[in-house]
Image 1 (cartoon, rainbow, N blue to C red):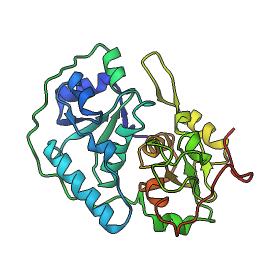
Image 2 (cartoon, helix red, strand yellow):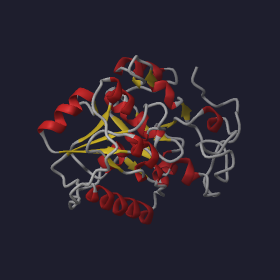
Image 3 (cartoon, helix red, strand yellow):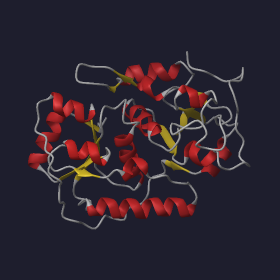
Length: 287
């Protein structure tokens, strides 16, 4: 299976031998303190909030196309995203991978282990701000991995697995978001959803956290009755942590994984949509 993850050594070689655009998804202060040479800082990869209606997805497409074009992405380059450690950046590099994949881009990678892995490998860093040559971002057919709230509503009560990967306080309905307990108007989860906290798809190494092996990912999913052949709809709060899980599942060979990118940020703001509130007895918690 073609791997999305790329090691620091592989990225160094790729940068020296082929067209590549490296995108740093961290905040501006972290980028200014030091980054991979040639990397372009696009914080919007993590911060942009999107709704799943036609207008929201069109705004997401146009915003990303402009940002990627300004970074020099023309369709000929391999695009590599990175963040800080994979368990501390809330899945932001993987969010970039998901969004670019949705836009149909053919060659997208994520730096395995993030920026700490690059540093641990003794590779060069710089504080020089990159000045990329702008390009025209290609308009490609969109992938089917992006779900709308209508898609999710239609899946309620079906054989589709709704997988919630948010932090435990969000899952049990104690907090509405990672941005504060009452950031969103309602607390809870999608009816019938199963839960595996996104951290569980990673493990520590001497070079920092990495995604678990395919066998380990399959084992984690089995704890809540999810099989690699299931159709899985992922969600979190705004599609970042779910993107981390999306990558973990795809790397592990799960055949039909899609994401509700609007996630709880959108769902909770529509009072007509059903939710489960509190820690109810029928909730299927992971062991």
